[in-house]
Picture 1 (cartoon, helix red, strand yellow):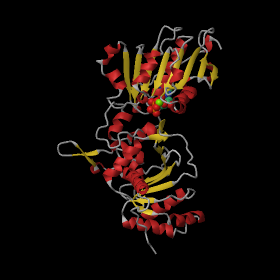
Picture 2 (picture 1 turned 90 degrees about the horizontal axis):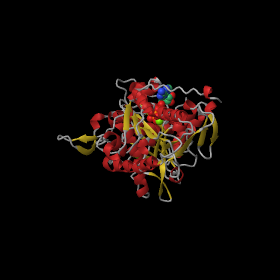
Picture 3 (picture 1 turned 135 degrees about the vertical axis):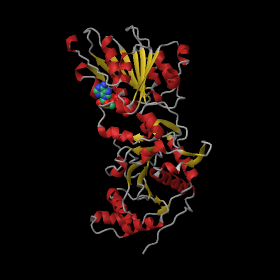
Picture 4 (picture 1 turned 30 degrees about the vertical axis):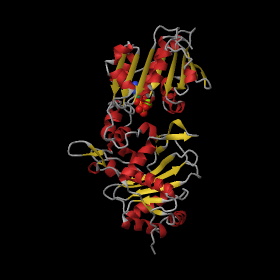
Length: 473
Ligand SMILES: Nc1ncnc2c1ncn2[C@@H]1O[C@H](COP(=O)(O)OP(=O)(O)OP(=O)(O)O)[C@@H](O)[C@H]1O
Ligand SMILES: [Mg+2]
């Protein structure tokens, strides 16, 4: 490869991307919403610095190597670095060697999770790109700054791209609170980008973003650093708790179901699986639909679950007529269902059909605890492994058009509800300890609570669960 062959063209498509790309400040932050083009421009800038300063050595990092591999590196290899520019790639060392315009000098890009401090702590670097900076601790950042001393290049820079978080986060203090800048004695640049500005995102993605509500909309679509006071599950993070990777639930994991009936409001059926070793719970399937009769809901539930192991129990809200109808359909499944579905239906009808534990405040406490917990192995919390996980593709039917095409669009699945699930305010405007029912859109939240809290009560009192078994015909 010769210098003439190297032709890197980077075209920012938002003002935030342009600012990050062009700044020569010592440190820079691009904060923006989902899909705002943050990783794309961060990787592009890394490539640009590798070409501008032949012999450069940079680091692309995220909190964990696993998250880096699935997101940023995918963008880097599929969209940013043309394969013809790669002179070598040592996958064990996480090292990419690039041709540069100077045929005698190559540049290097290392990729590593910040949770491998022994490796990073011994590096000398010309630049660092910290993707999803919100996941970092201030000590991580300080450590990275300390590595910027690669003597082969005259220019050193750390830059980060991130979803915004609470204003109390160190990045907000560092980049937005100007009082901090002189103390750090460094020039810093900060830019914002919102997801709707990135016209490369497909229309369906933009519509999905419009379903975010309230503070989640401000933070994850508009890219603002808003606090989450008033939000009931403020520790829920779409990038933490939603798993976008394919994940096959092992057959031996116990299954559970929770149901919230509804007609004008959505009916919600959630399927959960629990890892017997780590305790991780995954919502791997759900129905979230308005205007279904209970008969249709019962039949739909069967069709999707027919190859699942039977759940240990099913917790439902207390509508006796809907419960009775559902069980009746399962005991006497309609003739138009296939034979295997009909056999499964009769087995499902024998599964304990619990009245969900409906204590709202205890239930919310338990869900909050699980959302804030990580998987622990031998009592050691595992980085980046939340205890409660929602599969991104859990919805087992096309989004209900009554919801997705409402103006503005309404939540179409459980995870869409988190951002608008708020505490009620009293007459003085203070938050109470009750969910704000007037805002609606809590059908998935209720179903989640039924699953979590009924399960908790079952675990605490295995001998005397508050169970009512239907006794029909
Ligand atoms: N300047 C650009 N030129 C071409 N395509 C772009 C550009 N910026 C962004 N894109 C496209 O937009 C997509 C989303 O960008 P990217 O993955 O960088 O967003 P993000 O802000 O990192 O999202 P997330 O919040 O999910 O991490 C990219 O896969 C890329 O295809
Ligand atoms: Mg990204």
